[in-house]
Length: 500
Ligand code: HEM
View 1 (cartoon, helix red, strand yellow):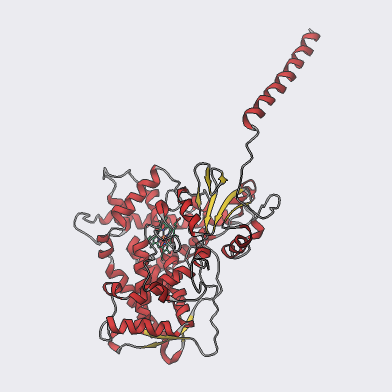
View 2 (tube, helix red, strand yellow):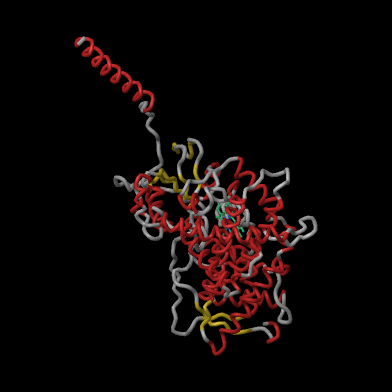
Protein backbone atom coordinates (compact mmCIF):
# COMPACT_ATOMS: atom_id res chain seq x y z
CA UNK A 1 0.00 0.00 0.00
CA UNK A 2 2.76 2.37 1.13
CA UNK A 3 4.95 1.33 -1.82
CA UNK A 4 2.01 1.96 -4.13
CA UNK A 5 1.71 5.46 -2.66
CA UNK A 6 5.39 6.22 -3.29
CA UNK A 7 5.16 4.76 -6.80
CA UNK A 8 2.21 6.96 -7.70
CA UNK A 9 3.98 10.10 -6.34
CA UNK A 10 7.06 9.16 -8.38
CA UNK A 11 4.98 8.54 -11.50
CA UNK A 12 3.25 11.87 -10.91
CA UNK A 13 6.57 13.77 -10.67
CA UNK A 14 7.99 12.08 -13.77
CA UNK A 15 4.80 12.81 -15.74
CA UNK A 16 4.83 16.46 -14.65
CA UNK A 17 8.46 16.71 -15.73
CA UNK A 18 7.69 15.21 -19.16
CA UNK A 19 4.59 17.41 -19.63
CA UNK A 20 6.50 20.57 -18.68
CA UNK A 21 9.25 19.63 -21.17
CA UNK A 22 6.62 19.10 -23.88
CA UNK A 23 4.88 22.39 -23.08
CA UNK A 24 8.21 24.24 -23.23
CA UNK A 25 8.97 22.60 -26.55
CA UNK A 26 5.62 23.55 -28.06
CA UNK A 27 5.24 27.04 -26.58
CA UNK A 28 8.80 28.23 -26.46
CA UNK A 29 10.37 26.66 -29.50
CA UNK A 30 13.80 28.18 -29.99
CA UNK A 31 12.95 31.01 -32.35
CA UNK A 32 14.90 31.98 -35.41
CA UNK A 33 16.76 35.13 -34.40
CA UNK A 34 14.93 38.05 -35.95
CA UNK A 35 16.79 40.65 -37.96
CA UNK A 36 15.05 43.65 -36.45
CA UNK A 37 15.71 47.24 -37.61
CA UNK A 38 18.28 49.21 -35.59
CA UNK A 39 17.49 50.79 -32.25
CA UNK A 40 19.26 52.57 -29.41
CA UNK A 41 19.89 50.60 -26.19
CA UNK A 42 16.67 49.98 -24.25
CA UNK A 43 15.95 50.02 -20.50
CA UNK A 44 14.26 47.12 -18.70
CA UNK A 45 10.46 47.39 -18.41
CA UNK A 46 10.05 50.77 -20.17
CA UNK A 47 12.20 49.96 -23.22
CA UNK A 48 12.63 53.24 -25.12
CA UNK A 49 9.71 55.15 -23.59
CA UNK A 50 12.10 57.46 -21.75
CA UNK A 51 13.58 58.62 -25.07
CA UNK A 52 10.29 60.06 -26.36
CA UNK A 53 10.32 63.22 -24.25
CA UNK A 54 7.53 65.78 -24.51
CA UNK A 55 7.80 66.11 -28.30
CA UNK A 56 8.14 62.46 -29.44
CA UNK A 57 8.11 63.26 -33.19
CA UNK A 58 11.15 65.52 -32.73
CA UNK A 59 12.93 63.03 -30.43
CA UNK A 60 12.57 60.12 -32.86
CA UNK A 61 13.55 62.36 -35.80
CA UNK A 62 16.81 63.02 -33.91
CA UNK A 63 17.28 59.30 -33.26
CA UNK A 64 16.67 58.57 -36.96
CA UNK A 65 19.71 60.71 -37.83
CA UNK A 66 21.81 58.15 -35.96
CA UNK A 67 19.89 54.88 -36.43
CA UNK A 68 18.38 55.42 -39.87
CA UNK A 69 14.91 55.94 -41.38
CA UNK A 70 13.60 52.63 -40.05
CA UNK A 71 13.98 51.91 -36.32
CA UNK A 72 12.44 49.27 -34.11
CA UNK A 73 11.76 50.73 -30.67
CA UNK A 74 10.26 49.05 -27.65
CA UNK A 75 7.69 51.33 -26.08
CA UNK A 76 7.19 49.46 -22.82
CA UNK A 77 6.34 46.00 -24.11
CA UNK A 78 5.08 47.23 -27.50
CA UNK A 79 7.37 46.62 -30.49
CA UNK A 80 7.22 49.78 -32.61
CA UNK A 81 8.50 50.45 -36.12
CA UNK A 82 9.29 54.13 -36.66
CA UNK A 83 9.54 55.25 -40.28
CA UNK A 84 11.09 58.58 -41.27
CA UNK A 85 11.51 58.47 -45.04
CA UNK A 86 9.06 58.77 -47.93
CA UNK A 87 10.44 55.60 -49.57
CA UNK A 88 9.79 53.47 -46.48
CA UNK A 89 6.41 55.12 -45.83
CA UNK A 90 5.32 53.70 -49.20
CA UNK A 91 6.35 50.18 -48.20
CA UNK A 92 4.53 50.28 -44.86
CA UNK A 93 1.10 50.86 -46.41
CA UNK A 94 0.39 47.18 -45.75
CA UNK A 95 0.01 47.94 -42.02
CA UNK A 96 -3.74 48.48 -42.16
CA UNK A 97 -4.90 47.73 -38.62
CA UNK A 98 -4.89 49.87 -35.50
CA UNK A 99 -3.45 49.12 -32.04
CA UNK A 100 -5.91 48.51 -29.21
CA UNK A 101 -5.51 51.50 -26.92
CA UNK A 102 -7.66 51.95 -23.83
CA UNK A 103 -9.07 55.23 -25.18
CA UNK A 104 -10.54 53.33 -28.16
CA UNK A 105 -12.18 50.84 -25.84
CA UNK A 106 -13.72 53.32 -23.43
CA UNK A 107 -14.24 56.52 -25.42
CA UNK A 108 -14.99 54.98 -28.80
CA UNK A 109 -17.40 52.26 -27.79
CA UNK A 110 -15.12 49.24 -27.89
CA UNK A 111 -13.30 50.27 -31.08
CA UNK A 112 -16.46 50.54 -33.17
CA UNK A 113 -15.66 53.97 -34.63
CA UNK A 114 -13.68 54.29 -37.87
CA UNK A 115 -10.23 55.35 -36.69
CA UNK A 116 -9.73 52.77 -33.92
CA UNK A 117 -11.57 49.85 -35.56
CA UNK A 118 -9.32 46.92 -36.33
CA UNK A 119 -8.81 45.99 -39.96
CA UNK A 120 -11.64 43.63 -40.94
CA UNK A 121 -15.29 43.43 -42.06
CA UNK A 122 -16.68 45.93 -39.53
CA UNK A 123 -14.15 48.59 -40.47
CA UNK A 124 -14.66 47.91 -44.21
CA UNK A 125 -18.43 48.38 -43.75
CA UNK A 126 -17.99 51.72 -41.98
CA UNK A 127 -15.50 52.96 -44.57
CA UNK A 128 -18.02 52.08 -47.27
CA UNK A 129 -20.61 54.21 -45.46
CA UNK A 130 -18.07 57.07 -45.26
CA UNK A 131 -17.37 56.86 -48.95
CA UNK A 132 -20.89 56.31 -50.28
CA UNK A 133 -23.02 58.18 -47.75
CA UNK A 134 -21.17 60.68 -45.55
CA UNK A 135 -18.42 62.27 -47.64
CA UNK A 136 -20.03 62.31 -51.08
CA UNK A 137 -19.68 65.36 -53.36
CA UNK A 138 -23.47 65.79 -53.02
CA UNK A 139 -23.26 66.04 -49.24
CA UNK A 140 -20.25 68.37 -49.47
CA UNK A 141 -22.30 70.63 -51.72
CA UNK A 142 -25.36 70.43 -49.46
CA UNK A 143 -23.33 71.40 -46.39
CA UNK A 144 -21.53 74.30 -48.10
CA UNK A 145 -23.81 76.90 -46.49
CA UNK A 146 -22.79 75.67 -43.02
CA UNK A 147 -19.09 76.28 -43.70
CA UNK A 148 -19.75 79.71 -45.21
CA UNK A 149 -22.10 80.80 -42.40
CA UNK A 150 -19.66 79.70 -39.72
CA UNK A 151 -16.67 81.29 -41.50
CA UNK A 152 -18.46 84.66 -41.67
CA UNK A 153 -19.70 84.37 -38.14
CA UNK A 154 -15.98 84.09 -37.17
CA UNK A 155 -15.15 87.15 -39.30
CA UNK A 156 -17.87 89.11 -37.52
CA UNK A 157 -16.76 88.00 -34.09
CA UNK A 158 -13.19 89.14 -34.91
CA UNK A 159 -14.60 92.49 -36.08
CA UNK A 160 -16.23 92.93 -32.69
CA UNK A 161 -12.92 92.34 -30.90
CA UNK A 162 -10.41 94.15 -33.08
CA UNK A 163 -11.54 97.76 -32.48
CA UNK A 164 -8.75 100.06 -31.32
CA UNK A 165 -5.97 97.76 -32.53
CA UNK A 166 -6.50 95.27 -29.70
CA UNK A 167 -4.96 91.81 -30.25
CA UNK A 168 -7.62 89.22 -31.10
CA UNK A 169 -7.72 85.72 -29.60
CA UNK A 170 -7.36 84.12 -33.03
CA UNK A 171 -6.80 80.68 -31.54
CA UNK A 172 -10.25 80.56 -29.93
CA UNK A 173 -11.89 81.98 -33.05
CA UNK A 174 -10.37 79.31 -35.29
CA UNK A 175 -11.24 76.43 -32.94
CA UNK A 176 -14.74 77.89 -32.63
CA UNK A 177 -15.02 77.81 -36.41
CA UNK A 178 -14.02 74.17 -36.92
CA UNK A 179 -15.99 72.92 -33.91
CA UNK A 180 -19.10 74.75 -35.08
CA UNK A 181 -18.82 73.39 -38.61
CA UNK A 182 -18.50 69.78 -37.53
CA UNK A 183 -21.11 69.97 -34.74
CA UNK A 184 -23.62 71.21 -37.30
CA UNK A 185 -22.63 68.68 -39.96
CA UNK A 186 -22.68 65.68 -37.62
CA UNK A 187 -25.38 66.58 -35.07
CA UNK A 188 -27.15 69.60 -36.51
CA UNK A 189 -26.35 71.48 -33.31
CA UNK A 190 -25.18 75.07 -32.95
CA UNK A 191 -23.62 74.34 -29.58
CA UNK A 192 -20.57 76.49 -30.16
CA UNK A 193 -22.60 79.62 -30.77
CA UNK A 194 -24.66 79.18 -27.65
CA UNK A 195 -24.24 79.58 -23.91
CA UNK A 196 -27.20 77.42 -22.98
CA UNK A 197 -26.69 74.86 -20.19
CA UNK A 198 -26.86 72.06 -22.76
CA UNK A 199 -24.28 73.72 -25.01
CA UNK A 200 -21.88 74.42 -22.14
CA UNK A 201 -22.08 70.80 -21.01
CA UNK A 202 -21.41 69.60 -24.57
CA UNK A 203 -18.43 71.92 -25.05
CA UNK A 204 -16.88 70.86 -21.75
CA UNK A 205 -17.33 67.15 -22.47
CA UNK A 206 -16.02 67.40 -26.05
CA UNK A 207 -12.87 69.18 -24.92
CA UNK A 208 -12.22 66.60 -22.15
CA UNK A 209 -12.91 63.82 -24.65
CA UNK A 210 -10.41 65.14 -27.22
CA UNK A 211 -7.82 65.62 -24.51
CA UNK A 212 -8.14 62.03 -23.29
CA UNK A 213 -7.93 60.65 -26.84
CA UNK A 214 -4.52 62.30 -27.17
CA UNK A 215 -2.88 61.37 -23.86
CA UNK A 216 -0.01 58.88 -23.64
CA UNK A 217 -1.54 56.29 -21.36
CA UNK A 218 1.19 54.16 -19.76
CA UNK A 219 -1.05 51.12 -19.41
CA UNK A 220 -1.24 50.88 -23.23
CA UNK A 221 2.49 50.23 -23.22
CA UNK A 222 2.99 48.43 -19.92
CA UNK A 223 -0.31 46.48 -19.76
CA UNK A 224 0.45 44.54 -16.58
CA UNK A 225 0.52 47.84 -14.68
CA UNK A 226 -2.85 48.76 -16.19
CA UNK A 227 -4.85 47.83 -13.09
CA UNK A 228 -2.98 50.51 -11.13
CA UNK A 229 -4.16 53.29 -13.49
CA UNK A 230 -1.23 55.36 -12.22
CA UNK A 231 -2.07 58.42 -14.31
CA UNK A 232 -5.77 58.21 -13.48
CA UNK A 233 -6.74 58.26 -17.16
CA UNK A 234 -8.94 55.17 -17.08
CA UNK A 235 -11.06 56.71 -14.34
CA UNK A 236 -11.32 60.00 -16.24
CA UNK A 237 -12.17 58.25 -19.51
CA UNK A 238 -15.00 56.32 -17.89
CA UNK A 239 -16.44 59.50 -16.41
CA UNK A 240 -16.25 61.40 -19.72
CA UNK A 241 -17.71 58.50 -21.68
CA UNK A 242 -20.69 58.43 -19.31
CA UNK A 243 -21.38 62.13 -19.81
CA UNK A 244 -20.84 61.95 -23.58
CA UNK A 245 -23.09 58.92 -23.76
CA UNK A 246 -26.04 60.64 -22.17
CA UNK A 247 -25.61 63.72 -24.42
CA UNK A 248 -25.55 61.53 -27.52
CA UNK A 249 -28.53 59.47 -26.34
CA UNK A 250 -30.54 62.65 -26.09
CA UNK A 251 -29.43 63.89 -29.50
CA UNK A 252 -30.15 60.55 -31.18
CA UNK A 253 -33.57 60.41 -29.62
CA UNK A 254 -34.34 63.88 -31.02
CA UNK A 255 -33.23 62.70 -34.44
CA UNK A 256 -35.36 59.56 -34.23
CA UNK A 257 -38.42 61.61 -33.37
CA UNK A 258 -37.82 64.02 -36.27
CA UNK A 259 -37.90 61.34 -39.02
CA UNK A 260 -36.62 63.35 -42.02
CA UNK A 261 -37.36 62.23 -45.56
CA UNK A 262 -34.02 60.80 -46.64
CA UNK A 263 -35.05 60.49 -50.28
CA UNK A 264 -35.58 64.22 -50.72
CA UNK A 265 -33.67 66.05 -48.02
CA UNK A 266 -30.06 66.54 -49.15
CA UNK A 267 -29.08 68.56 -46.10
CA UNK A 268 -29.29 65.75 -43.56
CA UNK A 269 -26.70 65.60 -40.82
CA UNK A 270 -24.50 62.53 -40.24
CA UNK A 271 -26.74 61.14 -37.49
CA UNK A 272 -29.77 61.34 -39.80
CA UNK A 273 -27.84 59.51 -42.50
CA UNK A 274 -26.54 56.79 -40.17
CA UNK A 275 -30.01 56.22 -38.68
CA UNK A 276 -31.54 56.06 -42.15
CA UNK A 277 -29.31 53.11 -43.09
CA UNK A 278 -31.05 50.84 -40.57
CA UNK A 279 -32.92 48.86 -43.20
CA UNK A 280 -30.57 49.43 -46.09
CA UNK A 281 -29.45 46.04 -47.34
CA UNK A 282 -26.22 47.45 -48.80
CA UNK A 283 -24.82 47.85 -45.31
CA UNK A 284 -24.48 45.82 -42.12
CA UNK A 285 -26.90 47.14 -39.53
CA UNK A 286 -25.30 49.63 -37.13
CA UNK A 287 -26.31 49.58 -33.46
CA UNK A 288 -27.01 52.86 -31.64
CA UNK A 289 -23.62 52.49 -29.90
CA UNK A 290 -21.93 52.09 -33.31
CA UNK A 291 -23.61 55.31 -34.48
CA UNK A 292 -22.45 57.12 -31.35
CA UNK A 293 -18.89 55.83 -31.90
CA UNK A 294 -18.82 57.11 -35.49
CA UNK A 295 -20.32 60.48 -34.51
CA UNK A 296 -17.78 61.03 -31.74
CA UNK A 297 -14.96 59.91 -34.02
CA UNK A 298 -15.96 62.45 -36.66
CA UNK A 299 -16.17 65.26 -34.11
CA UNK A 300 -12.73 64.39 -32.76
CA UNK A 301 -11.06 63.77 -36.13
CA UNK A 302 -12.37 66.89 -37.79
CA UNK A 303 -12.02 69.68 -35.27
CA UNK A 304 -8.47 70.00 -34.05
CA UNK A 305 -6.86 68.78 -37.29
CA UNK A 306 -8.41 71.61 -39.28
CA UNK A 307 -8.01 74.21 -36.52
CA UNK A 308 -4.31 73.61 -35.86
CA UNK A 309 -3.61 73.83 -39.59
CA UNK A 310 -5.30 77.24 -39.93
CA UNK A 311 -3.54 78.52 -36.80
CA UNK A 312 -0.11 77.39 -38.03
CA UNK A 313 -0.77 78.86 -41.48
CA UNK A 314 -1.66 82.26 -40.05
CA UNK A 315 1.34 82.14 -37.70
CA UNK A 316 3.71 81.41 -40.60
CA UNK A 317 2.08 84.24 -42.55
CA UNK A 318 2.70 86.62 -39.66
CA UNK A 319 6.37 85.71 -39.79
CA UNK A 320 6.45 86.11 -43.58
CA UNK A 321 4.73 89.41 -44.52
CA UNK A 322 5.49 88.91 -48.20
CA UNK A 323 3.37 85.74 -48.19
CA UNK A 324 0.45 87.71 -46.73
CA UNK A 325 0.89 90.38 -49.37
CA UNK A 326 0.91 87.87 -52.24
CA UNK A 327 -2.10 85.95 -50.88
CA UNK A 328 -4.10 89.17 -50.55
CA UNK A 329 -3.10 90.34 -54.03
CA UNK A 330 -4.43 87.04 -55.37
CA UNK A 331 -7.68 87.39 -53.39
CA UNK A 332 -8.12 90.97 -54.62
CA UNK A 333 -7.54 89.84 -58.18
CA UNK A 334 -9.84 86.79 -58.10
CA UNK A 335 -12.57 87.98 -55.69
CA UNK A 336 -12.13 91.75 -55.34
CA UNK A 337 -13.36 93.99 -52.52
CA UNK A 338 -17.04 94.07 -53.38
CA UNK A 339 -18.01 90.56 -52.36
CA UNK A 340 -16.91 87.90 -49.87
CA UNK A 341 -14.75 84.96 -50.87
CA UNK A 342 -16.61 81.63 -51.27
CA UNK A 343 -15.71 77.96 -51.64
CA UNK A 344 -16.26 78.24 -55.39
CA UNK A 345 -13.32 80.69 -55.60
CA UNK A 346 -10.79 78.26 -54.08
CA UNK A 347 -9.81 76.49 -57.35
CA UNK A 348 -8.64 79.89 -58.72
CA UNK A 349 -6.67 80.74 -55.56
CA UNK A 350 -3.49 78.85 -56.43
CA UNK A 351 -1.24 80.76 -54.07
CA UNK A 352 -3.62 80.19 -51.16
CA UNK A 353 -3.64 76.47 -51.98
CA UNK A 354 0.17 76.51 -51.95
CA UNK A 355 0.17 78.17 -48.51
CA UNK A 356 -2.04 75.38 -47.21
CA UNK A 357 0.23 72.68 -48.67
CA UNK A 358 3.31 74.37 -47.23
CA UNK A 359 1.60 74.47 -43.83
CA UNK A 360 0.80 70.76 -44.04
CA UNK A 361 4.43 70.08 -44.96
CA UNK A 362 5.92 71.86 -41.94
CA UNK A 363 3.07 71.33 -39.49
CA UNK A 364 1.18 68.11 -40.22
CA UNK A 365 -1.78 67.97 -37.82
CA UNK A 366 -0.92 64.34 -37.00
CA UNK A 367 2.90 64.21 -36.86
CA UNK A 368 2.80 60.38 -36.67
CA UNK A 369 -0.44 60.17 -38.70
CA UNK A 370 -2.58 57.82 -36.57
CA UNK A 371 -0.67 54.77 -35.25
CA UNK A 372 -1.08 51.68 -37.44
CA UNK A 373 -0.52 48.02 -36.51
CA UNK A 374 0.59 45.04 -38.58
CA UNK A 375 -1.62 41.98 -38.72
CA UNK A 376 1.13 39.54 -39.72
CA UNK A 377 4.91 39.24 -39.72
CA UNK A 378 6.53 40.83 -42.77
CA UNK A 379 9.93 41.72 -44.15
CA UNK A 380 10.60 45.33 -45.08
CA UNK A 381 13.88 46.72 -46.39
CA UNK A 382 15.56 43.43 -45.48
CA UNK A 383 14.39 43.59 -41.83
CA UNK A 384 11.94 41.35 -39.99
CA UNK A 385 8.90 43.14 -38.63
CA UNK A 386 6.91 40.87 -36.29
CA UNK A 387 3.10 40.64 -36.34
CA UNK A 388 1.32 43.16 -34.10
CA UNK A 389 4.08 45.74 -34.47
CA UNK A 390 2.93 49.31 -33.89
CA UNK A 391 3.79 51.63 -36.77
CA UNK A 392 4.56 55.32 -36.42
CA UNK A 393 5.10 57.15 -39.71
CA UNK A 394 6.89 60.39 -38.89
CA UNK A 395 5.13 62.65 -41.41
CA UNK A 396 6.62 65.64 -39.60
CA UNK A 397 10.19 64.42 -40.27
CA UNK A 398 9.36 63.43 -43.88
CA UNK A 399 8.02 66.94 -44.54
CA UNK A 400 11.30 68.46 -43.32
CA UNK A 401 13.69 65.99 -44.94
CA UNK A 402 16.46 68.05 -46.62
CA UNK A 403 17.13 65.24 -49.11
CA UNK A 404 13.60 65.81 -50.51
CA UNK A 405 12.99 69.51 -49.94
CA UNK A 406 15.18 72.47 -50.82
CA UNK A 407 15.26 75.13 -48.07
CA UNK A 408 13.48 72.45 -46.03
CA UNK A 409 12.85 74.56 -42.94
CA UNK A 410 11.74 77.74 -44.74
CA UNK A 411 8.08 78.59 -45.18
CA UNK A 412 8.09 78.95 -48.93
CA UNK A 413 4.68 78.30 -50.59
CA UNK A 414 6.10 79.16 -54.04
CA UNK A 415 7.66 75.67 -54.12
CA UNK A 416 4.18 74.24 -54.82
CA UNK A 417 3.07 76.78 -57.45
CA UNK A 418 4.48 74.80 -60.36
CA UNK A 419 4.62 71.37 -58.76
CA UNK A 420 2.22 68.45 -59.05
CA UNK A 421 2.79 67.33 -55.49
CA UNK A 422 -0.56 66.99 -53.76
CA UNK A 423 -1.78 66.09 -50.26
CA UNK A 424 -4.14 63.30 -51.33
CA UNK A 425 -1.84 60.40 -50.46
CA UNK A 426 -0.15 59.71 -53.80
CA UNK A 427 3.00 61.70 -53.07
CA UNK A 428 4.69 60.26 -50.02
CA UNK A 429 6.81 63.32 -49.34
CA UNK A 430 3.57 65.08 -48.31
CA UNK A 431 1.07 62.87 -46.50
CA UNK A 432 -0.78 65.01 -43.92
CA UNK A 433 -3.92 62.90 -44.47
CA UNK A 434 -2.08 59.55 -44.53
CA UNK A 435 -2.44 57.31 -47.50
CA UNK A 436 -3.94 54.04 -48.69
CA UNK A 437 -6.61 52.05 -46.91
CA UNK A 438 -6.44 53.94 -43.60
CA UNK A 439 -6.02 57.35 -45.25
CA UNK A 440 -8.33 60.12 -44.02
CA UNK A 441 -11.92 59.71 -45.29
CA UNK A 442 -12.68 63.35 -44.37
CA UNK A 443 -9.96 64.78 -46.59
CA UNK A 444 -12.25 66.86 -48.83
CA UNK A 445 -14.10 68.33 -45.87
CA UNK A 446 -10.88 69.00 -43.93
CA UNK A 447 -9.20 70.63 -46.90
CA UNK A 448 -12.27 72.73 -47.74
CA UNK A 449 -12.59 73.95 -44.13
CA UNK A 450 -8.91 74.91 -43.92
CA UNK A 451 -8.80 76.65 -47.30
CA UNK A 452 -12.02 78.56 -46.73
CA UNK A 453 -11.11 79.48 -43.14
CA UNK A 454 -7.77 80.89 -44.22
CA UNK A 455 -9.24 82.64 -47.26
CA UNK A 456 -11.83 84.56 -45.24
CA UNK A 457 -9.25 85.55 -42.62
CA UNK A 458 -6.88 86.90 -45.27
CA UNK A 459 -9.52 88.62 -47.38
CA UNK A 460 -11.21 90.29 -44.42
CA UNK A 461 -8.18 91.42 -42.41
CA UNK A 462 -4.61 92.61 -42.62
CA UNK A 463 -2.76 90.63 -39.93
CA UNK A 464 0.09 91.86 -37.76
CA UNK A 465 1.71 91.15 -34.41
CA UNK A 466 1.52 93.48 -31.42
CA UNK A 467 4.71 95.59 -31.67
CA UNK A 468 6.38 94.13 -28.56
CA UNK A 469 5.56 90.52 -29.37
CA UNK A 470 7.88 87.85 -30.75
CA UNK A 471 5.86 84.99 -32.17
CA UNK A 472 6.44 81.76 -30.27
CA UNK A 473 6.37 78.85 -32.75
CA UNK A 474 6.87 76.01 -30.23
CA UNK A 475 4.78 72.88 -30.63
CA UNK A 476 2.75 70.87 -28.14
CA UNK A 477 2.25 67.14 -28.70
CA UNK A 478 -1.18 65.55 -28.19
CA UNK A 479 -4.00 64.18 -30.32
CA UNK A 480 -2.73 66.73 -32.85
CA UNK A 481 0.26 69.08 -32.93
CA UNK A 482 -0.98 72.56 -31.98
CA UNK A 483 1.06 75.64 -31.16
CA UNK A 484 2.16 75.58 -27.54
CA UNK A 485 1.27 79.25 -27.19
CA UNK A 486 -2.14 80.13 -28.66
CA UNK A 487 -2.08 82.78 -31.37
CA UNK A 488 -3.13 86.36 -30.63
CA UNK A 489 -2.76 88.95 -33.39
CA UNK A 490 -3.97 92.35 -34.55
CA UNK A 491 -6.62 92.29 -37.26
CA UNK A 492 -7.15 95.42 -39.38
CA UNK A 493 -10.30 95.29 -41.54
CA UNK A 494 -9.60 95.58 -45.28
CA UNK A 495 -13.10 95.29 -46.79
CA UNK A 496 -16.00 97.80 -46.94
CA UNK A 497 -18.03 97.97 -43.73
CA UNK A 498 -21.12 96.21 -45.12
CA UNK A 499 -19.16 93.00 -45.81
CA UNK A 500 -18.67 92.25 -42.10
C1 HEM B 1 -7.05 69.21 -42.01
C2 HEM B 1 -7.87 68.27 -41.67
C3 HEM B 1 -7.51 66.82 -41.45
C4 HEM B 1 -6.30 66.22 -41.37
C5 HEM B 1 -4.92 66.84 -41.50
C6 HEM B 1 -6.54 64.80 -41.15
C7 HEM B 1 -5.55 63.84 -41.03
C8 HEM B 1 -5.79 62.50 -40.85
C9 HEM B 1 -4.75 61.51 -40.72
C10 HEM B 1 -3.27 61.78 -40.76
C11 HEM B 1 -5.36 60.31 -40.53
C12 HEM B 1 -4.68 58.96 -40.32
C13 HEM B 1 -4.23 58.38 -41.63
C14 HEM B 1 -3.46 57.12 -41.44
O1 HEM B 1 -3.58 56.47 -40.40
O2 HEM B 1 -2.69 56.76 -42.31
C15 HEM B 1 -6.78 60.54 -40.53
C16 HEM B 1 -7.71 59.55 -40.35
C17 HEM B 1 -9.04 59.80 -40.21
N1 HEM B 1 -9.68 61.02 -40.39
FE1 HEM B 1 -8.80 62.77 -40.84
N2 HEM B 1 -7.88 64.58 -41.08
C18 HEM B 1 -8.52 65.78 -41.27
C19 HEM B 1 -9.88 66.01 -41.29
C20 HEM B 1 -10.83 65.04 -41.08
C21 HEM B 1 -12.25 65.27 -41.10
C22 HEM B 1 -12.91 66.60 -41.44
C23 HEM B 1 -12.85 64.08 -40.78
C24 HEM B 1 -14.30 63.74 -40.66
C25 HEM B 1 -15.27 64.56 -40.44
C26 HEM B 1 -11.80 63.10 -40.58
C27 HEM B 1 -12.00 61.79 -40.24
C28 HEM B 1 -11.01 60.84 -40.15
C29 HEM B 1 -11.26 59.45 -39.80
C30 HEM B 1 -12.60 58.84 -39.46
C31 HEM B 1 -10.02 58.79 -39.85
C32 HEM B 1 -9.74 57.32 -39.55
C33 HEM B 1 -9.69 56.53 -40.85
C34 HEM B 1 -9.44 55.05 -40.65
O3 HEM B 1 -8.80 54.67 -39.68
O4 HEM B 1 -9.90 54.26 -41.50
N3 HEM B 1 -10.59 63.72 -40.76
N4 HEM B 1 -7.02 61.88 -40.74
